[in-house]
Length: 152
Image (cartoon, rainbow, N blue to C red):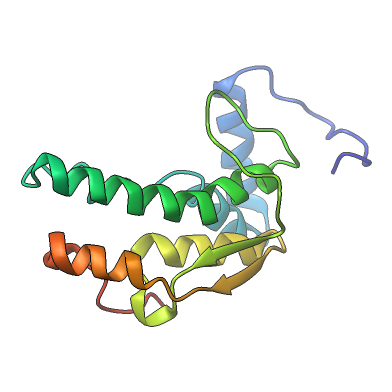
């Protein structure tokens, strides 16, 4: 995109950008709209279960570390590549790789499915990593939040 001509219309504010996205979603081929949706849904999260109110402080601290690990290996890589190195605000990002890391499919949660689809949409590789520390952590502190199924 950096080497291409700018689009014929460049939005000047959020409302105009939303209007451009609406037109794109209504007019683009189905595959492109799905790829775009997959990309934007993966730019944030996973936030839960860290914000679950029934965890005590120790459980929240452990959950936060596990969430940070997942964000660092997936979300932050996608943020960098999503808009060719443009990352807004104070969002963390990683520019040091062209792949994301997610748990094996049998350990996926809902957000992992978004990460995989977003990576595929923008041409990033997906590496499935067994992370026993993460799995053990959730089994110990919050078994009801531990991933149990796959995301198709």
